[in-house]
Length: 169
Image (cartoon, rainbow, N blue to C red):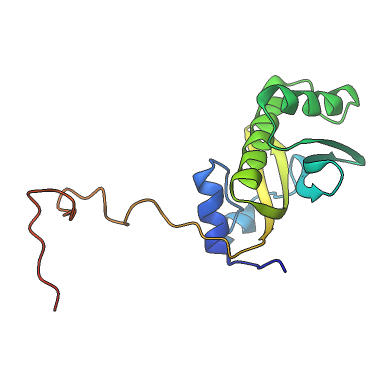
């Protein structure tokens, strides 16, 4: 049975794979046109016959590739949409979408997810994620790599030989 996790775990997982997190700032959503750009959907799922798949949907066209994708396979998927005139001829937008496909495929495979559904808009400056749904067989756990103040000059790490830790009460 899939276990759903909270949005903070989603944000940490997306951030650790270099994927933009969904827009959550109310001030930005009030004045920005969130429907600007080309809408797309990335899905990843397990198929009993074909194994792990990653799919891209733009408009009414849907294309599928194996997961995890490499850069060449992702560019081939994106090129199908360019040939169908669903993407403009601008290289930067196609590259942003192919990089996002590779990152999503690797996150899906590495985190052993059962399902990944990501919607967003492709813009001339890159992409904007609108919504993300993930589910896995076990509870997804994405812990931050460092403490919040680990880059402080006054931070004390217990593994240093010279560290003098205060006794706990």
